[in-house]
Image 1: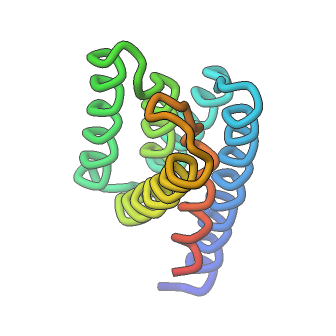
Image 2: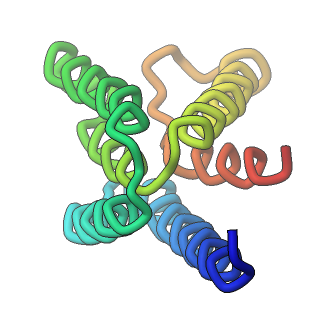
Image 3: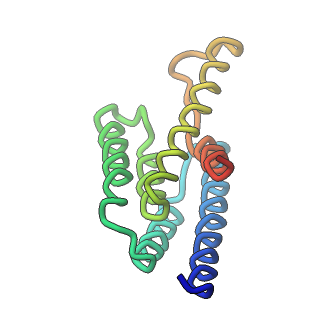
Length: 150
């Protein structure tokens, strides 16, 4: 592959990483402080992710797992009357348009693990109840950053 093509791919990856960190940081802050997400920002990020993926000629099979996971989260949100926030499903869907499957799964697993540890601390040490709501998006940010370091 020519050096110019490699440089172009690296720049695209760097832009994608910075955009994802900024998106997750802003949405994580909103989720933590206000218990809400911005559908406008999520949709914009998802459309940009879609454009990046089309431009990079991302194969169709690389879209399937993120899309399926996102639909499951949205379905669980509907079936449980919001026990899992609908916004979390939209965030996962937007992230699925931007991230390759490997990074998507890595981010989700690390983020969910950190969220589970946090929930355990709230239950055991802080004596919070099982119904205590915790925001997911900040943990996805930590999962994404952790995934970048692995």
